[in-house]
Amino acid sequence: MGEFDLIARYFERPARHAVLGVGDDCALLQPRPGTQMAISTDMLVSGRHFFADTDPFRLGHKSLAVNLSDLAACGATPLAFTLALSLPEVNEPWLAAFAEGLFALAGAHGCELIGGDTTAGPLNICITVFGEVPVLAGRSQALLRSGAKPGNDIYVSGTLGDARLALDALLGKVTLPDEILTVARQRLEMPTPRVALGLALRGIASAAIDVSDGLLGDLGHVLEKSAVGATVEADKAIELISAHAYCTRAEGQFGLKLSTDQWRALALAGGDDYELLFTAPPSLREAVAQAAQSSQTPVTRIGQINAAPGLRLVDNQSQPLANTYASFDHFG
Ligand code: ADP
Ligand code: MG
Image 1 (tube, protein in one colour):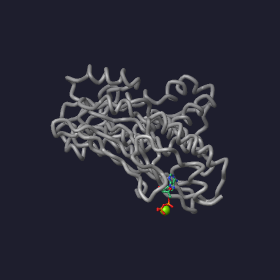
Image 2 (cartoon, rainbow, N blue to C red; image 1 turned 90 degrees about the horizontal axis):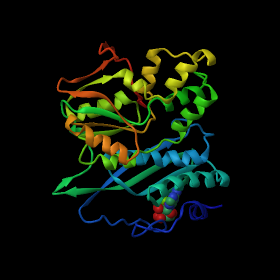
Image 3 (cartoon, rainbow, N blue to C red; image 1 turned 90 degrees about the vertical axis):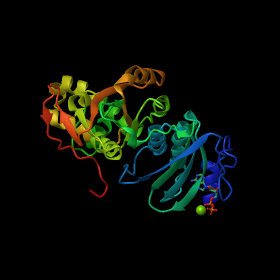
Image 4 (cartoon, protein in one colour; image 1 turned 60 degrees about the horizontal axis):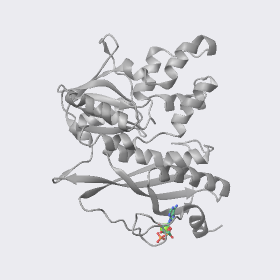
């Protein structure tokens, strides 16, 4: 099968919202009046971001999910995406399953594939997403990293640490009971982009970012861009690890024993969570709860923004903890 047959069979779909989709030199998108485009790119490299033998349906899902997560963090509505694919071979069952996982998530978010590039080479998946954000009275409604203010609450959506726990299990660093591995692996391989929450937080959150490299590292980006500091309650983050309650309860039975410090490291620096970390003034706590409810996304308050620079960690007795939890850095 040649390059063009492959594209036509697996990736060409009729354009719906786009003026022009796959098949010409460029796709065409028409921004609606009173809106801005939000654009983001994420690349997934085999052997670095995923195991070469990852289930292709799940890989298709994740490739788009990590990109939609960036749109969610900006409070942008997904519109379209491009797919640049480097493939070691034409493996039709693999391509069919990859496309199925990709289009299942794309369809769920009304985000259409409008173009891309296909070449032979090491397995590499690069997606660029295009989203839309309204401009009201001349002001962009995009959520940025730069708006956190002293006194703001810090929140995180969903769960933390599960993806890293699954990764450690797949690497043989830890042995997990099957039930936990299934749950954790689902979070690693099928992350949920928090698009509905991001949209519901427009006009409420003062700053937002998605957690891809680890909670504290990503919070650090918000602090830097906002020129503020923060205090985080480490043990509230631990409670967001799906596996934590289960493993703690079942520890004797399964021989899995993680120290409090290891649980903290999973929650605070695990990475690959694709949750939203955001800030909002305490006067908007009710509005945040409403946004969580309307988007059916759990949200937990885990700390506070401070005027004093730096990131402080405290335990459940409000005692200071040393921050030794480094986040992921490809070149670090
Ligand atoms: P060009 O050589 O002009 O860059 P290509 O021959 O690479 O164009 O691609 C032909 C058409 O197929 C273009 O519209 C391109 O956007 C689209 N395309 C190529 N690869 C993919 C892919 N993996 N997914 C979706 N569309 C693709
Ligand atoms: Mg090309």
